[in-house]
Image 1 (cartoon, rainbow, N blue to C red):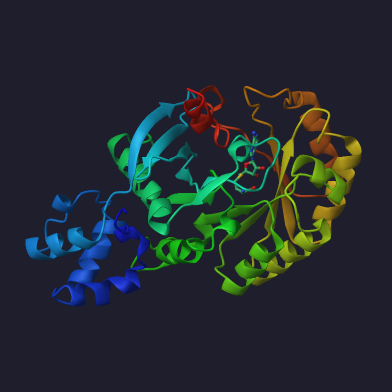
Image 2: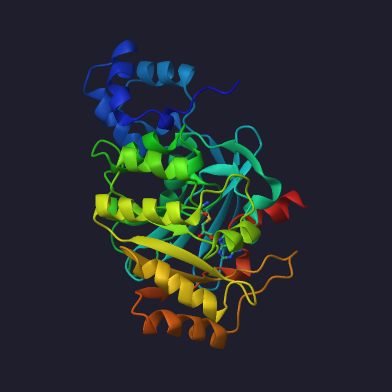
Length: 351
Ligand code: SAH
């Protein structure tokens, strides 16, 4: 059995731990700094901590749970990473360079139970939840990569984080609350809530737990259909929460957080690009505090489904525009490096 990851502890737990190991109280702040500000991955890096404390920590915890397996850089600057975990499983993370900052796309599970037909991660089902430390350490590696290979014009170390990698964040309640705690806490990563976005295919009990947690971060609903029938076709997970309930919970969350909920709409030629779907989507989005993000399908190598033509994408968008629905078309980065959710891992599994 592997030791627990030190990064899985919330910063507030470091004080009692350091005390138990005989360290002075102020050492816990230094330790949190090494974990969440200085991106330490080996005990030797924790230079201002006494050797005795480092050794006591190393006896009980692992500092590194992810090892980089692959790194690919797309012609558009998107960087895609495959990491192996201590049990040999693999997860993906992505750095998407934006104009002024980077966006980190993080995974929350190995595999996923949500069964969306267009998603590579869904193919093998859910393998396991990631621990909080495994989610947070993705940030550690991505920040180290940015420090070594800075993006021209990106001055500071600010980044946005989106839970749009592998897995369903609202299906991993072992890790999501502590992960957000560490990301948002001043003694952790100290991120602004505005820089964090949770994306979900909308399990109702997960959305209700998120409402109860009230983290204030942004929410994206990956809708997949404008009727329950359409959603069943494209996202055939048993017990899918009814669409009306998902929309209601998404609206309630937006009112709670003070930020509009994004509806993510994957555009697939002949399946989700129909004018009547655009009209129904406009109606759903117009019914509450929503905006729409149109995502042309990132086609999987082993699948017949394709993204619509540019003209069809714009025609779909035009219907939303005419209905006054705020929307954007996501420029899908990294096509040439298989950056669609779960593709890198799948290629590797397939050998
Ligand atoms: N399970 C969560 C987060 C992971 S998926 C969710 O469903 O939101 C993140 C986003 O990628 C979702 O909006 C999903 O619809 C989209 N996505 C998945 N596979 C895709 C593909 N092949 N092409 C384009 N978008 C995809």
